[in-house]
Length: 453
RNA sequence: GGCGACGUGGCCGAGUGGUGAGGCAGAGGCCUGCAAAGCCUUGCACGCGGGUUCGAUUCCCGCCGUCGCCUCCA
Image 1 (cartoon, rainbow, N blue to C red):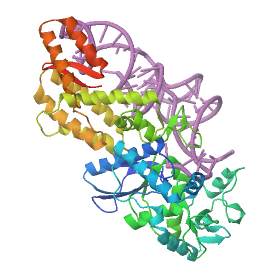
Image 2: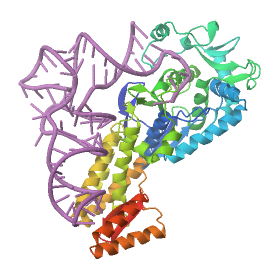
Image 3: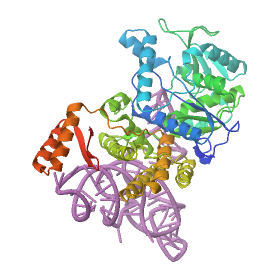
Image 4: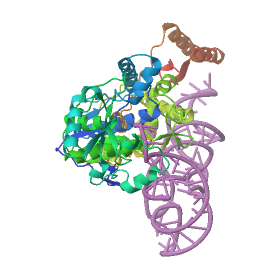
């Protein structure tokens, strides 16, 4: 069984499953008011890889990732653009999934929307009030963090220390809160704002509430794993946990957080304005390259993403595709047990995808060497293992050479003829023509091979 | 101020108490008519100062620097 770092305990520990053979995981998804940036892309890829690996390991995975489709930013943005907020969220949800599809992130088994769970959230907030853990103020309902045993677990800080950290910062929620860290469960609507009915007045749910209700509804108490970006550990996940504790309900057993995408050593974020959208990355590069880049680092480490690092990943991907082409159509055999075992060993060790990728590239060299030597038999199980590993990591190989128009094929044929006649000047001129037309020209035993570059 | 990370060769990025993962870029060679692809060789890296040790990049202490969370944030 895999060992994973757990933010709550601060240690790498065995993933213990509630139900044998089955994994329940919840990963905080996007708030849909704008295009996703590379940071969103990283968490999506990290947890997609974890999900795929667990499934590959033979576990039945239930993967839930929410869509936050109502919150302050959405209202603000819709107001600024003077259009219905539902139109905005629908648009950016489409953008989100288009980007996810492009980078090969599998759709969740469930993607609950906050607006689909308002009634249940209202019921849960009522229960929190009944239990004395929440209170209403003139502008909403708040959770009293002082009523929660062990608040601050994920931040590894006591409530007093967290409060001290407030320093000169402005306290969100105004002066009606009993404690600065108390957070909104329900926000009363101002005129013109979208709202749902509640016993405390029309309003909307606070962000931290939706994930509690939705994860417990879809996965049940004591679900196995809760994930997200490191910046969600506190306060978002802490606040989710606080609600479940206050409710007396078992919550996530294992907390997994991924490191940030950085630019020049600084966290990529909207507030810093140093972000690249996933949409732009996909338009400008091979979308698979981002997965390769993410896989080549450890999920908890910061990752520098620039045009240079993406292009490096694209070049690395070319090397993988080249072997995929070279081995396309070869006999299907069982994968090498050694290859599979080595992969399992590093992945079980806190999802060491960087080591797995090192193995992948090692296999590329080894297989090429064997094929250069003509030893197809020895190469075959390595190739099969290599393909299986890449598949488990979600890296899609591209073996097809793409569509080549007839006139281009004709040029290649003429080059072969020229080469047969040892007319090197003509052969090179034809190659230049092909290259200029945007094709990659490679010689092979079968003659000129041409593919779109 | 509290808490937590990090500082590895041109770039990205793993890892480990003891003959330098991996990718990209570069250099030389093999192969090739020439290229491309592929293969081989090539880099004596771990912020600084102490300490522990037979031996530290890896453990401990101090320092410097960078970053993150404590506020919306993947």
